[in-house]
Amino acid sequence: GIEYVSFRHEQMAAHAADAYYRLSHKLAVVNVHLSPGLTNALTGVATAAADSTPMLVITGNTPSYHHAREPHQGIRFHADASQGDIYRPICKRVWRVDDAKFLPDVIPRALNVAQTGRPGAVLLDVPMDVFSQQVQAAPITVA
Image 1 (tube, rainbow, N blue to C red):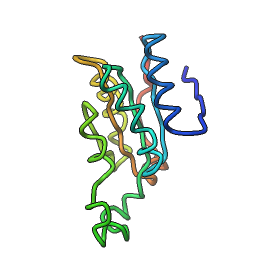
Image 2 (image 1 turned 135 degrees about the vertical axis):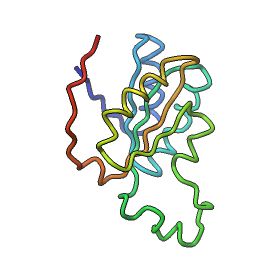
Image 3 (image 1 turned 45 degrees about the vertical axis):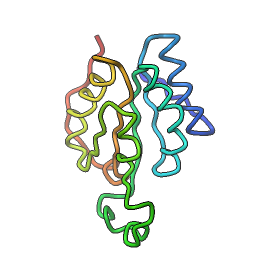
Image 4 (image 1 turned 90 degrees about the vertical axis):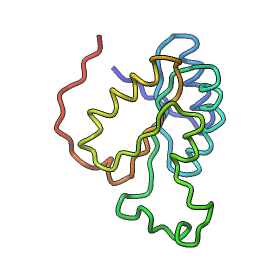
C-alpha cells in the first residue's frame, strides 16, 4: 500500500524522500502545492538529482482553464516561466498533464524514467482541476 507522510514544509518533504531512498532503496513521491510549494522543495529535489536519487515530484498548478491567463503572466512577471521550466534543469523529465485520462500512462513512465539509467527526479505538473477528473484505469499491481 501507499503510506502518506505529511510534513510542515516542502523542503523537509523533499529531503525526507531523498533520505528514504538512501536508506530503503525505495522511491518516494513528493506531492507539493503549486508555485511556492514547488520552489520550496527545489533544494531537496536538486540534491536528489545531483546524487542520482530517484524521486517523483507531483505538483499542482493553476486550473487548466486559467493557463496563460494569470495576471502575473499577462504582465510578464517572472518572464512567464512555467513550473516545468524551473525544474527542467534538475529533472530527468518534466510532464505537464492537462487531462486526467493521461495519468494512468504517464505515472508508470515517470516512475520508470526516475529509476532507470542514471536515477533522478522527475516532475508531474498537474493543474488543480485535473485532480478532480474521473479516470477509467486498470488497478496497478506491485511486483
